[in-house]
Amino acid sequence: MPENTSEANPQAAPSALQVALDTRVAIGRLIRRLREVSDGQELSAAQASVLARVGKGEASSASALAALEGVRPQSMAVTISALEDLGLVSRTQDPTDRRRQLVVLTDAGRDAEMGNRDARHEWLARTIEETLTDQELGVLHRAAGIIENLARR
Image (cartoon, rainbow, N blue to C red; front, top):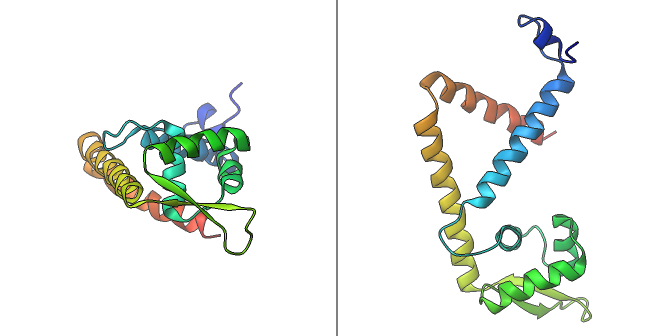
């Protein structure tokens, strides 16, 4: 017997629980797909994600980045070192806590992060244009507004 009432009766509205699950899964897949898109620079998914987080100002220390990415601090140290070796980030001493180092983007890191962001935006726009009908485009536009409203609550 189907758990979702809309599967048993196509006319029935899906439950909020089912819509929440479907939305979370779909957004997660889209985010993972977007992380795969880059401007051609050979960065791992972890490196690109850290670059984006630092660029957005989401975190500035290795421990905060590790927590956000859900990895051990030792793993984050390896990722940051690789980005540092590529000249994309540098570490500076935290002026308020000299025991801690802050991770900042270099000019090359800013350019790379912006290039990756632009590549993701272009991929998504092109995919939407090539894949969706005009009606689906309108539905997606309305859904984006609804998702934005949910995110603000």
